[in-house]
Image (cartoon, rainbow, N blue to C red; front, side, top):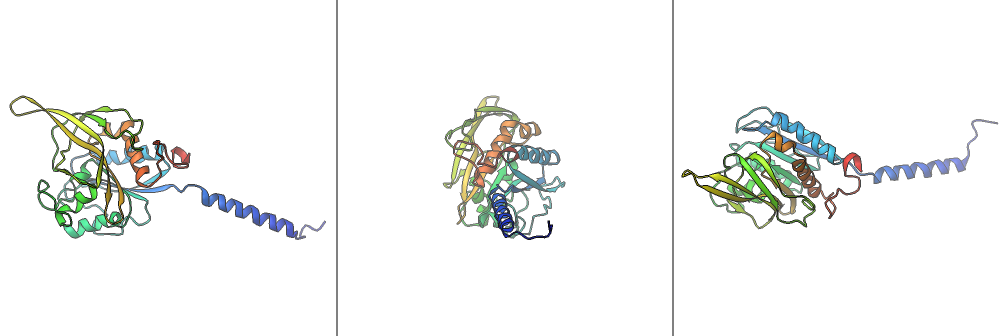
Length: 285
C-alpha cells in the first residue's frame, strides 16, 4: 500500500476536526488580566501585594501582575505615574496605593484615563486617600481638579480614626457581590470617614466602630465601608472598600472573598447569586 496516497475524505475530516477544536478554544474563558498598583505610605505593601495576588488567583480565573514601589512616603514614585497607557492590555486595575501627596492634576488625570475610557477599577483601603488636590474636607464641585479622584471613587473620605474593631453589616443583601455573606467584625482596623457619598455610588455595607472621645466617653462612628460606583461617561464599573489596613485582615478569607467578587462584578463575570460566571471560578471552573 502506498503510504503517500492522499484521501480527500481524510482531509475534509481533518479540517472539520481542526475547526471544531479551534472553535472550542475560542469559546474557552479567557483568564482575566489584573494590574495591581501598590506601594507608598503607612502599610505593609511588600507582603500585602503577595497576599492579594495569591488570594485572588486561588479564588477566580485571574492573573495578577504587580506594579510596586518600595518607597514608603506619600509621594512614592509609582511606575504608572505620568503614563496614561499604563493599563493597556488589562481587564481591570486594582488600586492599593497610598500616595496622598501626588497632587498634580495632569498626573491624576493620567491615572484616571483608563477608567474614564471604560476600564473597570477596584480600590482598596488607602486608595481612598490618594491623589488629593486641595483640602480633602472641602466640598467637591463636580468637574474640578479637587473632585477628580473622589468622582472616580464615588465617595469622599478625608481621614481615619484610631485602630479599633469594625463591625461590618451588609446592607444590600441582594447584591451579587455580597449575597450570602455574613456580617462580621474585624480585628483592630482603621475606619475611614465619609465626607460625601455621591449619587452614582451604591452602598453595600456599613461599618460601626466605637472609639473614645477626649473626655473619656464612647462614640460610635457609622460609615459606608463597601460600595460600587458608576464612573464617567462610560459608566465604568468601580468597586471599593475602605477595609484592609493590616495583614491579618487582608489575609482573612472573608476579605479576599469580598474583593474577588468585586473584581468579578466589575468585569462582568459574576452571576446574580454571587457565584463566578462559568469558567471564571477557581482553576477556570
